[in-house]
Length: 184
Image (spheres, rainbow, N blue to C red):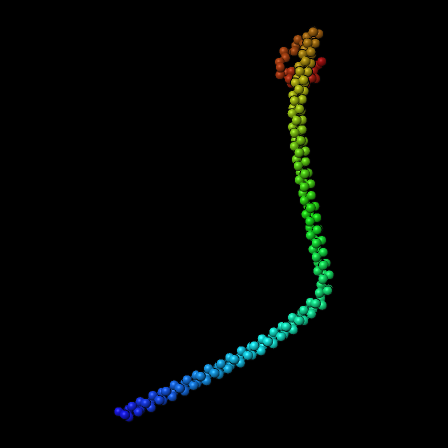
């Protein structure tokens, strides 16, 4: 039994030694990984410093260029401002002219409508007057034709001509349709 206990102890010590060896390898890998990561971080930091220095040089160059161009840019900016002001004035003038033209067109439309309404009223009044005059003229012509026919018949009757006796009695339709070209 003692032998089994000794063998068990030796076995346990071998297991412990294997585990200790495994832990040593893990610690070594962790240390190497930490060193690699630290070196990478340092490399990135050095690269970032180099990029920032290059960017700083570019900014200084741009500032120098801007300072050198600033005197030339000022007149350009002033001219651009004047051009913008002139464009605004032209735009306002055009807008005013368009508004004036629109007002004129509206005024002309109102006047034209009023003139047309007046002309239409005059034409209607003239048509009414012409209708009345036409009615009066027709009545006058009918009365004149009837009077002329009556005088013609009376003259025949009074004159005793044989032709007057042979005429048939007149009716109203004969008077209305007489063209006034009888024997008178």
